[in-house]
Length: 444
Ligand SMILES: [Zn+2]
Image (tube, rainbow, N blue to C red; front, side, top):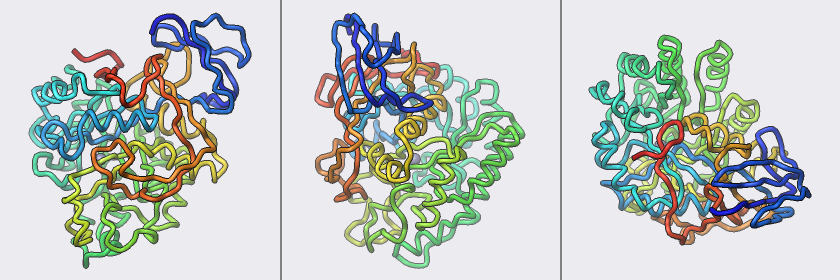
């Protein structure tokens, strides 16, 4: 952008609370936070009034799937959906693309696929799999923000899980860098074949104890290596006790949950509706309540989408069989209103939402200029109407495929305008997203 931009709002979501303010932007960055009515000499002066101003969301858990499975989701569609949903930075998962991002050469393929297509800024997780230890340093050097691994079958053969010993070895290799190992924490010894095709049988096949045992493994590895560990998509609220205790003991552990675990409950999943299938599963209403308490208490650190669509045929909607359907929920564009709809009802504030969906994810990915409305940060900003409500229609979303469990749900909160590094952008614009490395510099 040229010149300066002032944005004023009665409801600016700072990390420590919501208050009225004016945000002054110059050369892509926030340069001053002033009183709402302050005299500012800006080239453009925008008063949002009662529209809230949020830091752009940082979604550290997005499966873009390009190259290789672009028919599931790709950079063009995913980043436009992100932008429409107020997400100004995504971190791409190392699966389910082909190749998976487990080598520096595979990262180069990713970067080539993403170049010029991204409507928001994009960073990349590398993958830790058996046998790729020697690729971890080159991947970090090439710009990944950290590593993702599984402790259970990932669903695709190209991305096998680590054993307990391999997890420790990989985390030891990572310790000095400060980058996080993010872990899909389900223990295969506690997971079994579902007894039938229905949803209750599916939930029973992946019980809370499978998450608890796997998180014990992660806690052990973090304590033994000093490396930073992060539990992705926590679904079993009982694990909050274990996570809280590990944190209190000084172990470098954090955890995320996802909008679908906070919004839906197993009791509400209609028979045969496999668009609700994900792993670990959406559990029962008392668990959802306990997840909200753990999030409010700060034991769960953040909320990110785990946007993971597939080709519609793989969801097995015709049979409605939860045993064979692909597991993965599409929600990138609607995570913010889904979380806000419930948070608002619970008396929580937009500052809480910003902490969960912007501030913490930015720090997890090592992107210090992202996720906060603060002097020196990138001017990634979202004007958000906290009172507007709308009905979700999958066909109107920018996701590659319309299928989403939020179909027909009424959500509160609407993204009105988005600024990426100080420039107002919309999904149909020429894409202006950058590819980011850990630390925030551009890759390449
Ligand atoms: Zn995922």
